[in-house]
Image (tube, rainbow, N blue to C red; front, side):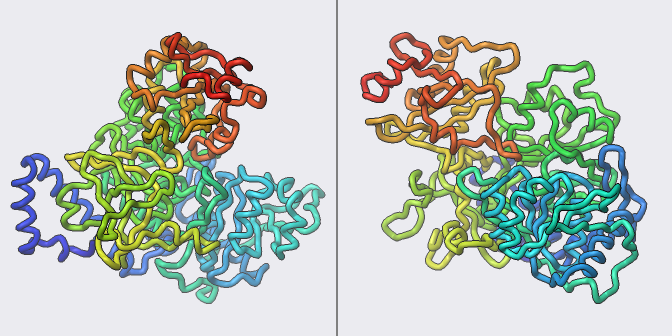
Length: 627
């Protein structure tokens, strides 16, 4: 899609309007036209930003020029203006220029928690044209070193909280020629471990940088490496150029946008794209205020919203479920400023309306994309469970995505006799592919080239075209609403049928006794495919009625999708962006000798789930226990 000439009232569009009205109801077509028009405006804004070569640094400069004293960052009891952001990032850039030989297009690794210095660091390096490799501070040992090696960084910048971790890795870091900078001054006679240098910017001036210090960056300059969550293997490093956070800002505009008077509460980690791109940097583009939390806390969340007078917040994954599980309070839904928008992805359809009603959120905006994806969707009208719309009119005008049949084992499309991919009809689930062209690009991962190549699909609709493989199962209904169904790595087969882990989780989560549920498939000797297991965490003070649990599952799910095993856990193992980890759970299977959690198996004769004893486990392994 391009500028207005693409969407202008040409003969093509007029003919499409006539055809659309004949094909759809008037109400549907009016909504289609509104959706396409708002998307066109956003795309024009993005194209205009590219023509002006807008970067995050030019956005900051504009903010400092027009509203220097407007609050930009609220952090606990601290407040920083747009002028402060400029000064603090200048100090970082000056110190780096004086104390290193870093040059443009290099990358430094950053190991920091959510704190103001993280933002000043990001902006300071960006001014020098140096990219920041944003490390997940929860990683340790080999996983952390893997990210360091992929980064190709010669420097690691970290806060003092990670000195002990760095000490353990120092021999390997030095072997790779990586120098360690520790942010902050050394005082009271304390001494940093040998091999670490204090990055003390306290006495560095925050005055504007000399022109020869500023790098000639463009909207295509790589600003960061952001790592995938690593739920299915080691994290991959996604290349993020300056235009990506600019596009994130325009995505907000599709749902009304952030206003200069808004305060956006961000409790997600800044090393992740949601917290940084949709949060801090989108606020920078909008000229509004970000209220940053050190980390997500379900018990402190709403108090922080009130303290900072937030009007919007970000969510992801199970965060909303954790908030809903908190005991009800008299001031639930009471705020000093109206709570306009909850913006994020992964809100379960089973709790959507309860969550929105209890906490009096004016608008929930669910979206779908990935850090590296070339496309995505955004739900602008609050349709419960949907991630947005892909209308008939958008399909005819743009054709920038397609849902196709796929092989669930290989996560690759199934091709027809003509060699092209086979689209699925609306209302059916398939693999989502996004078209790649000069506007919608996939820059790939830093590291082994096969990781990038594995995400590309050629000759999808016609010879020579190129698409991005999302790896996700999606469904577009007859009205154009798009629904995320599952990740291909999570979906499994049992009795010759494909089982959606998310569909099963949503059903199980309807039981009041279950706080959260993680569904996956485990191998059973002598059986093809994998049998479903539901790992669950109970609500405080609740117990499971295993007869009722069996009845609930069998009444709402086909037999092949009903969990065959139940694992009751005290706490769910999740990533720092609230995605359920499955790899270790899958590998542990249903072995009661190595699992300390209580394990249960379906007993169809009793019409209930029963606890697995040594005798039952042996009969399952021998194939004499009927699943």
